[in-house]
Amino acid sequence: MVMGRPREWDREKLKWQLMHWAELPNSLNINAFCCLPDVLISPTKLLQFVKEDQDFREVYNTVKAFIAARREEANCEKILSDKAFAISHKVYDLFQKEEDREEFKYQREFERDIQKEIKNEGNDEIVARFEGFLDHFDSLSKRRKADSQSINDK
Image (cartoon, rainbow, N blue to C red; front, side):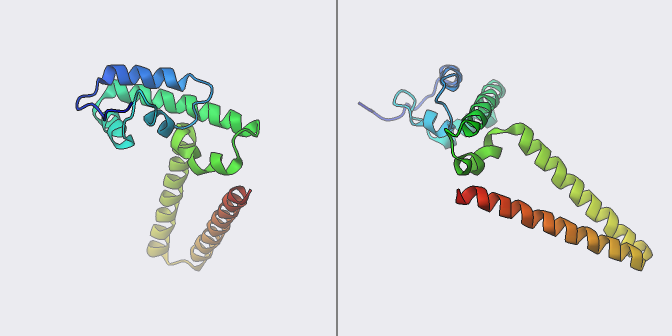
């Protein structure tokens, strides 16, 4: 019987519960951990501990790595649908998140550099190259959205 959440959380115990839970073969989503009868913690409280406690953050990130690997494997084996995988893939896969962040940073830096050249030189050739880049970037973005939509439609 659920009697309500404790006023004080034993972070050490919770940290190890989370790690042991992540090792289970059916652990695919941290929200499921939060709903366990012997845990019953709000995701907000869990994230608060992640922000406040370096050790807890390390365990949390390790757990996310477990889940990312398991979700990808489940998706490849068609246990987890493409749509379910795509919805929260970047939440768990730190490597993909970092790669996307770097790509976005590079694109923004490139755009700023081109805009500086345009302002400094006003060269029609540079303007044409920049517009070509923007068109190419736009087509890539549309293709990514279409790919995501086709995954979501499955």
